[in-house]
Length: 583
Image 1: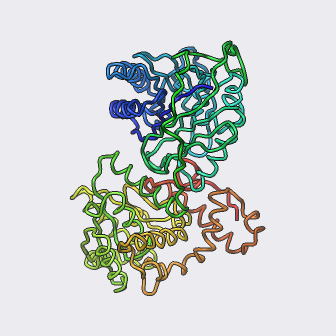
Image 2: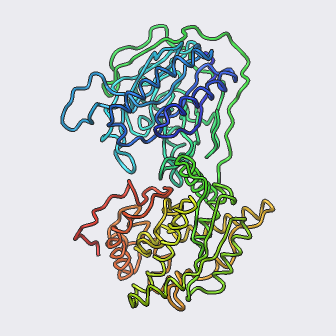
């Protein structure tokens, strides 16, 4: 057996910030080396951020990534870290690929490199390219065709990138064929509810297939609608957990590993899936035996509601910070959606950076106005009240609107008011719409849909209540004031656009609505399949018809944090103009 101290840097990066990301690699490499690491790793596409989308097709960006990688290799050596190999993800291009129909222009690659002694000693590209959900990697990248293996202190370390573990075949069995003692996979795997359990099962399975200890390094942070939750995992060859990093926390996992020494006569040539083994020797001789100082530990898992809430906070915080916004503005109605949105914003940015506006109309109840005021007291956010009655009367005098047009006018006045304050004071507006409303079109274009970001866009209404209750319970358990007024949770949901209005005037009960929507939106089941599960046929047809008609509204809604297997965004793409109806 041989020994190796591995450092897995579970950190964030920003798309396009090559200089800032390189500085992060330098800083965390310094930390890793100070911990005595023999091999240092960073997440998938660390240098460029992930996902880069159509930036991958821009030659100038690809070349900037390649130049940044070479510069980083030199700087690591200049800083005194050149003797420690560093694995880092970046954007590359395939030198050998010939232009052909169906291939991305410029043959870009989702790649990684090993940096050592000031040089780029090995590069490789992701072999399996995902093309489902939010992923479009067939559109952007050319696959890699090698099985990269580096020898570090007498241990053969096979290298992979994210999807190489999620799909069968390829680099996992190739790592076994190559005789690897460690399989190291760098990843940018977005968060989804319950994905942590799936991820652990996957890594255990792949370790057994590869026949060696497997390290799964994950990214942390947020990029537009995606959240990355960390949860890096190291398991032994039998799938036993050696170490597991915290969720949603940036940091470095360092641990001593006992690994098989590399074979004197290494396997060469082409192995599984036609992958050609490409080897580099960084340090051939095993280390002198030492007493392990860093043994693995398994961070406790967050319970489900806390996990989802934390993902929403991380997503909002990342969006604001990476786009240069310091403060947010929310229309506070006293209802549950705006209350949860405000609580998330206070946790993400600090209450001092959250501004609320109460915009009562003639139909606003006293308890709604009181609930908005109480929310401000409980959280410490800034609140002002701007009644919309005079504006509403002026419009009505000019236009004489009735019915739905009159109701929607109130929402649009509020949207205009919010955007005016946003322009004047520099806050970004947060849209408080939830997934249930967006699904069935229960929102007003240019009204409650205005904003730069929708923090609960992918949260069904029933989960909005669950998260609000969890947040209050968590505050009470810590001796803090629960942020959300109890009446905002217990009163019947209402847009208060006409006297006595409640949501169930227009919608089925949210429990039924959400259970149908989860099947139709998240799982793509048809009407007959949903009805076969015991739902009332008329209710199903009604919900599906509303959902189909609302596609044009969803296209115009701002981005928001994705927490489900299928959110309204990149991973659910339907035509606006379509005559097909499930019902």
